[in-house]
Length: 598
Image 1: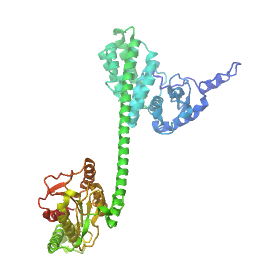
Image 2: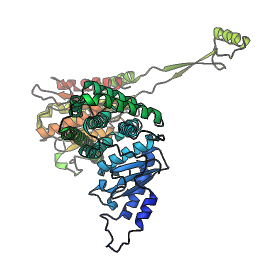
Image 3: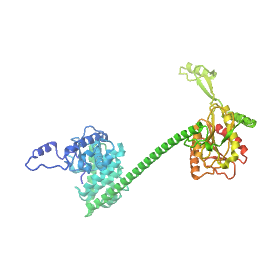
Image 4: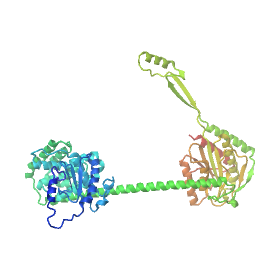
């Protein structure tokens, strides 16, 4: 077996090629190349561009054509500064389909690129030259050890090329196994160096090379295999320019084989056994690489699916925001009841009129306003700083320390002036949305909720000019009882409950957009007055909106009046046996919401 992928002297020179060209016109029909060589000139030039990145050298030429002078799939000629590459490695791709200059194009021809990476490793690290008069057998052994050494060195600087180096092993090693130039024990030792050496530099895995390791241990013996392993492991640490050390390792390799070979029996079918073991290794690596590619493809597909789902979710949320904006505009700008798409529905208006607030309601609004102001109050923050110069209060101890530092000739670091800055913390505004169910089962809640809506709106307007409240009555249609405004309402809007079915999802959308319940920075509360006797679709739509609000930090309170009421998922349930206690419950929840605001 020969390591002919790294060639120290060219198989033929350019003068030889020129001499052979003189005999082209010998009267016979001209030979037709299987692929026009000139079409591969561009591919070779682009490979040369990529070789600069792979090897770090700019003085190399890459020739790419069908067939090579050396007979190997590829070869590196150090004396010529040339990498020879067999274009047939790209099969079945045609020249016009290959664009190595484009990073990532190599994924379409991993076998060819793996061989090219291997030659790039030689170009970068096989820079030692044979001394004159060196033993050819020792040089051949050194080149054998060089195969795994350069790949290990390349892997240190370009670890992502490991996949391609694994692929190149299948392309480069298998032909040498099937057509060995070495025989007997030397053949088995060469297989061990090519396969197990790549294992020890991290190209192949230990489990993948088990078949070759077991066969070589049986043929070579444990002691000889251990000796050879120490030799190629030491060669892996050899410097790129150190020809003396490489040849010394090669000499030890030859001496070890000469000493042990006479005592080792050689199986008659050794070549077949080695080919079979190497075939198992290559099949194992191919299966591992295929599994890795499948895993990468699955991960890429999962990421693509996740990105697509996120894009769809963003589009859905954007569409929902646009729909909520349109719903809020139609509800709060209309004078009566509207459908979710903004169409007027005057026959379904639950509003019965307005009335003046009672003295009890006015007192409740005043008490709630004081409670909200107290809950919204934030202590002033104090920030104390020191400085070497005024303004500030003089600290005599620091001043004396500063004088002492100056007298000692050191740079003064003491800061004798202390200043305290007090800043007022802004009080958070309040956002309260009330959605009241006006289906037939909710008649008992109409009067107390109307009173609560007026009390909360009045108190919020008196507490902070930036506070907003709004109330929507909903069945299948939506009706604004109070609208988002900074003005305190003068009269109480009364309504009745005679509707059928429910449309809480759109009511929440309108309140969310009109009051910005999803936006942090304010005490936010959504109150839903309902028995939640909805269909599955109605419950799902409402629960989705509630979850979106609670995720942003908005409190959601559900008020119920009867024991038969259901709990709407995601809400804080509060059962009120007496409907008249609804205003107090809503006021308490609003106070807690603004107190929790940070």
